[in-house]
Length: 379
Image (cartoon, rainbow, N blue to C red):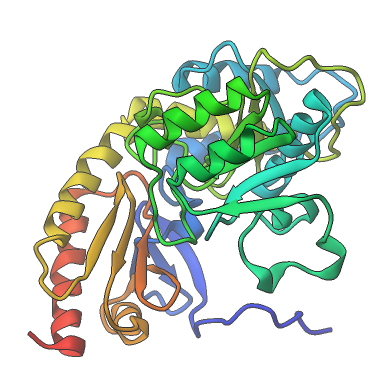
């Protein structure tokens, strides 16, 4: 049997990771500035994380949600305290798409509506409802065509407000920072007005913090720069540092009932252990603060490079846009300089490194990046 060939692969086999570095099967070292799609939050093979996961493996990996799991309670309490959402409830799942799927379902249970507003260039997942609110027709299969979705330009509050006034919109779903869309940041004023308009019209506001959450932006959640409190917040990626886990943070507006939501694997003993270990390390090592500090430094330095068209981002979620396609730049970074980066579209490089990135690693990247730009684009 062969693998179903849907991923374009680099001819690199990663065998080991430590901190912000990965090593291939030949022992060649790479600086990881992509973190496996923003998943590696506390660094590869963090000793505390490895210890906690190993200890839990020896005790219990999984049992169903039909019995008490105190690790779920501990994770919820720690997440509430660190994020500032202690009065919210937590529903645990396995992935970001599943988190968004359940958030949309909760919104519809609450107000009985079916219409959803999303934003151009959004990405919320590949499952049935989440792909429907993703602005990418390439991944929408015929079976995904369902409820009514309207897409608006990011930060166009007038258009969104006009639609909300019909009072038939179930939910508005928006990313804290658009990742695949090019590291586009919603204006603070836009988010504030959007939140107020949703409340006024009985519409549920869902903040997708799957990529931009967990300290990546320099705050625990990117929307906290705007000072708003959404009705539902979805999380995943950095939540488990590589172990699959996701969740929905649910405001006191919602009332739970038995059987309303469900999952087989969500909130397993091992997944919760991963989630708790991540929060412990983030707190002790001040990783949210480090993301803000190193991110600010990187953004300021990148803005001094004349060949770059625009630098966008917050914390360690950075988009570097060029006038020209960046395929060769990324290729030289990877194969000549041994640095992993991401891309969005054809012209933008994405940086999503572990939150423990040091200034010396940032400087090493900047030096190599400038050399590559010079090689490819000239002065």
